[in-house]
Image (spheres, rainbow, N blue to C red):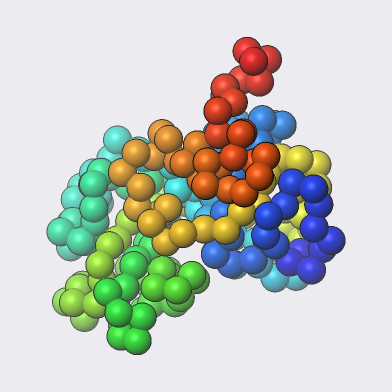
Length: 195
């Protein structure tokens, strides 16, 4: 998937650490107006988490031991429609040279943290933490097809995207910082027929 020919809507390739921003053509309501961080891409498909869908459920109600490490809002986020009975954590390290046990880097100091790792072993190394219930998954070639059909913009991520306190505005924030005409898309209404 990562080796496909870039299209007119691409800024970057679909690789771990890239963002997928739903375009108006997105037909799946699970992903309408979403920003997805890609975590893994290989010949078997792709995996990521939706960054801007907070749930009403407090982290403390499900993961009491992690409650003091998550930032505002202190809720679980809906990472996607797959595996919603499981959880995945994204963490930002204080020092990239001091990665703790259970941490797998994705983008610089940002990576996936195994929630089975004892909190006291990782707490000193972490600057930020967010926990997601479920994830987004695509089979072989599926994500490349969706990008080719105009369902997603593919853009570079910044680690702070994961921890944005204003998740409702994340789509616009990400598009606004893109080069050229793509920045104009940050002003479009959610329903393009209203334009």
